[in-house]
Image 1 (cartoon, rainbow, N blue to C red):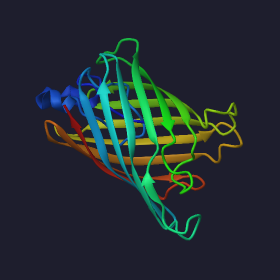
Image 2 (cartoon, rainbow, N blue to C red):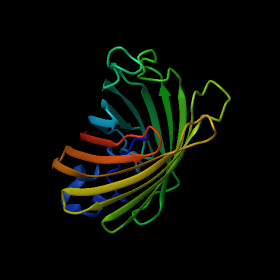
Image 3 (cartoon, one colour):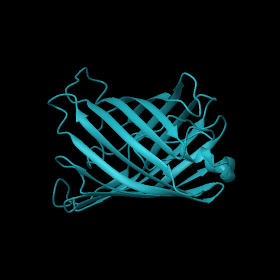
Image 4 (cartoon, one colour):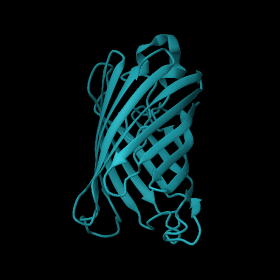
Length: 259
């Protein structure tokens, strides 16, 4: 799944209010699947973690993702996402008991494309690698390694920022079959309502590249971020989706810490 963070400089929304200071500007927009073009500052560490909920019919999926990200240089970062997952309502389906266990491990690196500025259209590129660490037998993972790439653009006007994403994931990278691969299209908007509160929303779609990729799904969500202290930010996000086997309700409650 795509990962979202920001540098302690514009063009992010919160960077326009100097009264909040460096710590405010360094925070992430991690609840959103649609990424922004900024990267974590060189030598700084950012930790995003929380609880994600998804309900489809009578089945619920709970995930606790952990996402540390470190700034490698003034232009790039490296992050990892892993965690624990448990499911309710799956016992009478493919499993005798509701499955639980560790999730897949995803490594992601994001780098600027060209120079970034406060009032321009800033572009970055991200490369993702999913390592199949989740149990395929218990239905928690596919047991396959996936490789994805995303082109990310961000533009800021006053207190509002827009993010655009176009991505492509090669499902089961060990095979030369493209019919089950997936396109990702995302659009996000972020608006700074007060010095400490930023509201945000996004819509994104997962589009099969061929007839083996399943059905298309569209997702819509909205939420907010609140700065608690100079090193701690809280995030909440609620959404839904359309398409076959898509969730009826999704939610996220989490935090971001930075050093």
